[in-house]
Length: 114
Image (tube, rainbow, N blue to C red; front, side, top):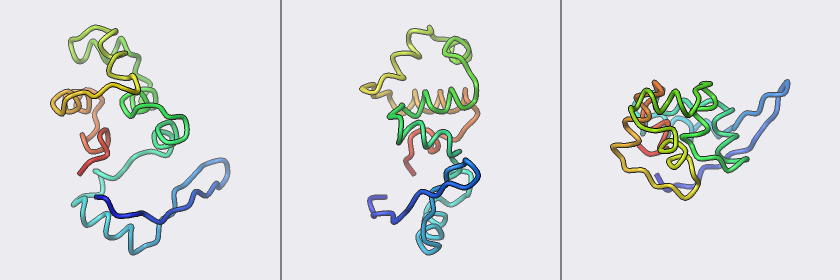
């Protein structure tokens, strides 16, 4: 999906929300095929976009999972998880699938791809 998304950020009671026109939201939902693939908590989005944190780390921190715990779930070393969380890291699709599964999320929530 390469179309421009017209959005603005609103803050209400200390929580930040991305607001998009209803027509664009409806189109995004139809493209996704299911609501779950688009559900990403504000905290994850903020860490990724505002703080420039990779999605793997943003999700892991949001879910309160340590690097060591994620490494254990994936049967890899903690240093491997740290490497995947570097900004310049480019994990393979199969790695993203394994990480998403270990975190209990859909791969599209991690990769931001359809």
